[in-house]
Length: 407
Image (tube, rainbow, N blue to C red; front, side, top):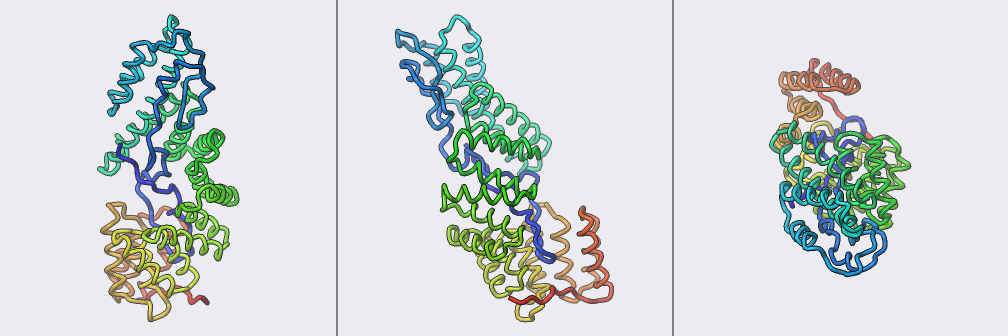
């Protein structure tokens, strides 16, 4: 199965100080899913029908919750159904498994163990079908088929809910449901789904991570830090956890603690453009120009197409108050590269940076034209005011420089 990218949901929306711009994301930026970089949810073991078992925990070895027929014989249709599930790859094949499971569940002539096994297998197949549909939705988003993608996302939500209906202890389905609800901006129910995942599997790191991302979005920073910190206790080798906690600490004004987290993230993921950019952005906001410049260089070297690094490095080169780090020609080239790499998601922030670069190069006519386009796209009133202030400077043939700050 083609895995969805392991994006964080909200970290790139970090509200940085004036002059350091966060890059807008595509319409389907999502948290880490439970099927990314992991083994698929294992199918219920058919052999468990032949011996008494404990109730399923919904973990990596689910089993039917039922007493078994004394004969210990496995019905031929169950064996066939298991084999079909084992081979199922497409949504159509999973549909067939689900339909056959429903028939067995509703057949009162079957013994309890067989019906309960069919419930577990139906739950597994529904969860798997939801993952397939979500994968396809991601591909449709990439090809700009947004309405079809949204329809598949809704179908995936229904699949994960169906999986939970037939096996309420299947924690993977709860987590996957949270992922899709987060995509749909149903944040309270996404939090509830991640919380249920944690209740069922307290060691599942992604559930803490994703709940923390949403709490960050809701500005419940203390709770978000608690989730990231718990996840780090479980796995202190995951750079994304330190990035998330660093973003949250930055939002609380805990700057040194944020920098420490970003440095941890860079140490754990030395080739991560995102981690280096987060560190660079924070250094830029503090006027630590040398550290910012070095980190932007590292980020762009790691990923020459990373829009956020290109954009914010261009901003610094166009507006840095220190001559040594201001480089208008390179700022203009880099701002244009950021737009070229934006996959068509050109927003007011990108155009703002491009306008600054034009002004820094003395081309105030292009700067005004570009910033007018940015104003048309800007939705936040505060951004519109800032853009209008900078346009006034350009009309007076003046450039904008960031305030000088003490390191």
